[in-house]
Image (cartoon, rainbow, N blue to C red; front, side, top):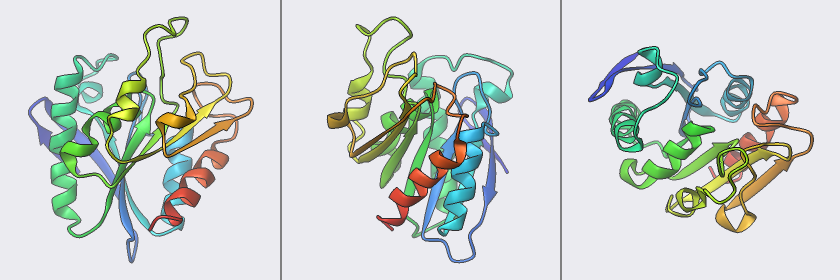
Length: 196
C-alpha cells in the first residue's frame, strides 16, 4: 500500500497475521531495500510467532536517492507512515525497527509514534573508521526497550550492551548480516515472543 508523507510516497508491504499479537514495522538501510536477507528472515520469523509485519520503503528510496537526507526530514516521513499503519491496526502494540539507517530512524522516532519497542539490526554505531563520531545517544534516547543485533565484524562498530535492553552480537557477521539471516530472524522472534 502507498502511504503519502510530507516527503513523498512510501510503500508498505504488509503481511497480516490471522490473530496478530503485535504490529512489527521494518525499514531498510540508506542504500538498501526491504528485501535484504536479514529483513526477510525477520519477517518470516515474526509472522511465525503471530506478528503482522509491514516492510516500508521510505520516500527517499522510492524517489531513487541513495542517501536519506536530513534526519529531521526522514523522521517526519517515518512518523507519517507509522501514524497511518497504526490507524489501520488499532489496539496492537507497535514495534518498529530496521537495519542500519532504518534502525537509527526507529530509535529517533520511537517516542513520537508511541512504539512499544525497537528492533535495531546492524545499528551503525559510528561511520567506518570514525569511532569518535558515536551515535550511541540515538539508542539511549529511544525511550523504549531496544533489541540490537549486530555482527562482530561490522565496520560501523557494535553498540555497548548498556545502551540497549538486549544486545546480540553474531560471530562472523558483517554489516549486511547475510551470513546466517535465519539466525537474525530467530533472535528477533524469540525476543518478541518473550514480550507479547
